[in-house]
Image (cartoon, rainbow, N blue to C red; front, side, top):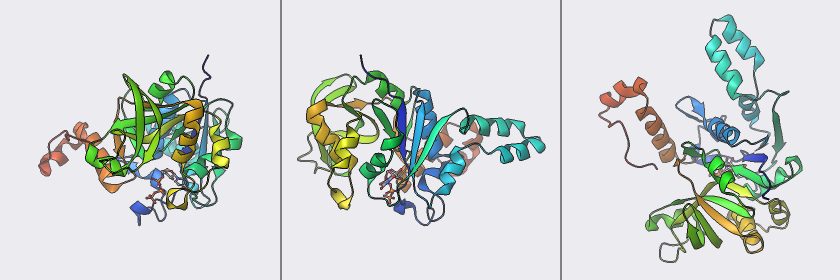
Amino acid sequence: MTQSVRTAIFPVAGLGTRFLPATKATPKELLPVIDTPLIQYAIDEARAAGIERMVFVTHPSKPAIERHVMDDKALRAELQARGKDGLAEDLAESAFCPVADDVRFVMQPEPLGLGHAVLCARDEVLPGPVAVILPDDLILGTPGALSEMIAAHEGGHMVATMTVPREETAKYGILAVTEQDGPIMKARGMVEKPAPATAPSREAVVGRYVLDASIFADLETQAPGAGGEIQLTDAISRGAARLGLRGFRFSGQRFDCGSKAGMLAATLHLASQDPDYADVFAEFGLTAEPSRAA
Ligand code: UTP
């Protein structure tokens, strides 16, 4: 029987340099798509997937992350005093309650890479495989990408993938696919940013992972890779031969909200579906539904 996935790790300790100056004082993960911060979409996706414990790997310079994630009683009381009960209820529902919810914060003192951030969560995870969610990869859709992956996970490492045009392979980690069965692909490893001519497939890895617990031992001995950082993909590739590696092509729509173009695309996409913004779209001569996500 496969073990259940009880813990989700949210690495949110990065510098967010692509969004400077916006990220000088505001963590990238708190930048909103319309009115909802990226991290909230990720939390909601993990909740819908039945995750029991959420572990946030953050940085001492980003206290606003914890402030957003946890319940703020004083703010809710203030809203209620002003007759805004609905708003107060919405806030209570989306935030974590320190008593009822199992939520942990650990620090990554220096942004030494995504793999290093995941390793920092090691002492806080529950037994069994773990999920990793990168909040700047926004994936919209029902069921959520993580729910789909957990339902399909049968041990080993699993990474979320999406098919990209061949000319774009150099922007992603690309899966070396050996077999495909519907949305699930067996792979022998991953290649970081291959040129289109040498890319082993068009399946690009994006920010959702379900990983065997041995990932922590592999990360501990992982030498720095690209950019001098401890790369999660390197440690996953090392485990692939031993454990098996699968790609999962999720059904939702993904936006790269780590980039400004992706953030704009996500905002336009959600706004185009909301009648409240119909006048804005008309004013700027925009069609209601963009044809393609960034
Ligand atoms: P990114 O590489 O997209 O984030 O990492 P970044 O480094 O903050 O952004 P840029 O490239 O400078 O603009 C994806 C996720 O991994 C986290 C980030 O916070 C983000 O949520 N991360 C990255 C860490 O937690 N620690 C790291 O050392 C690196």
